[in-house]
Image (cartoon, rainbow, N blue to C red; front, side, top):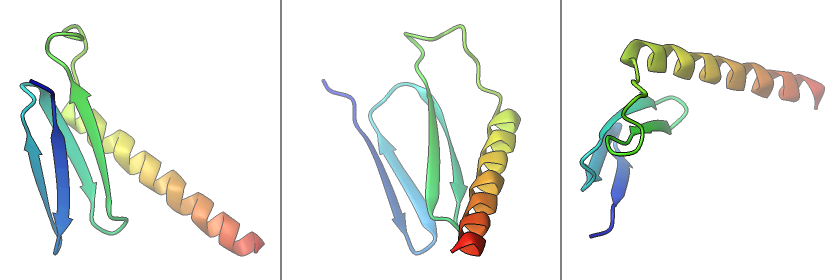
Length: 77
């Protein structure tokens, strides 16, 4: 059996279908229409644990950096 993961974004809602038996977190920014998906594979990387708060903070940091660079590029053009 192959692993599959489907992410659908419609009318402001995100639907995730998966046959994976792994734990995952999706951090969603509706404004940017981005889904950041972090997989934690139980079999392969048991020793790594993902803290949901840390995932949110890192995601917000990346969104902030992304917006700053967009504004910087717009100001240069």
